[in-house]
Image (cartoon, rainbow, N blue to C red):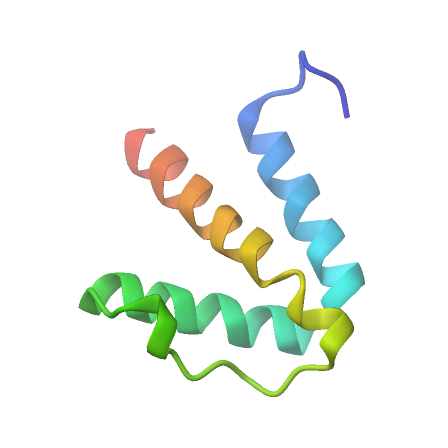
Length: 77
């Protein structure tokens, strides 16, 4: 990835990376939980995340970043 790459490309690269690190099922579960909570205005500290291994849990902040980027990027286009 380079600085000249589009934001859309960078978002897709992050999604691909997270899928490889977390697995598709876990990534989608976390993603859905975060999207649902943003729709309802829930406090993210009380969310019920899918079961994850410790090495997968460390990527949850990056999934949150992915959701934030997508909501901002695609709502403006």
